[in-house]
Length: 130
Image (cartoon, rainbow, N blue to C red; front, side, top):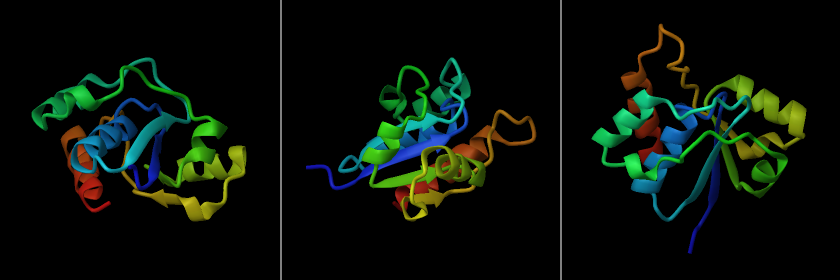
């Protein structure tokens, strides 16, 4: 029996939120998890897949990014966003109560100044503390 439904949200649903989803499936299989993006990309990031492969979690990542919907947000017990802009999007666009939202504050490795390995490790550490 799943104890809690968690929704991970980032911008593209390409690296941060699908990595969090896959790692949660590996390390916290009792949780029901999904992920979505406020502006979904067309592909899951190859660097994210590569890092998940090293973690033996590649098979747990979704096939393609998914858009954030009101249904996903409504059904989640907890919504974990990667940055405050995602929380604001959810509050403003979908009128969701803030008590369900937690911000992990992980920068997007699509930005050349952000190290993808470091972002991956931050996500992994936070998943293990869930």
